[in-house]
Image (cartoon, rainbow, N blue to C red):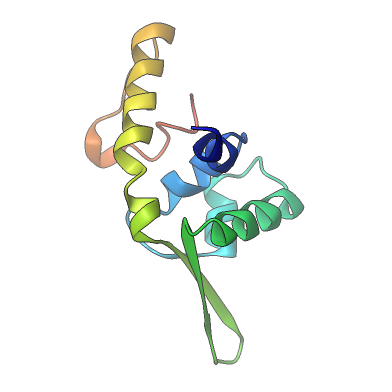
Length: 110
């Protein structure tokens, strides 16, 4: 349990995982989805999630350079847990869950 909480126990890690739930994304796309996170904190969060095996970082040899982040199998396994947290939040804090195809902000509003 301690290792799991070390991985998920920050303010931003669950939200970054949630943003990456359906597709890979570039740094700027992640930052735009979580517009209140600083670039420095996002960079650190991505590095830590990669080191923990939750996300992958894929560099493409293009001009301009392109880097994409995506969930590993381990990261995908966290999605049902994050959905449960969002449902718990909705139940006990009175925030409605959006319709499933519009759930981009579920965790951002927790």
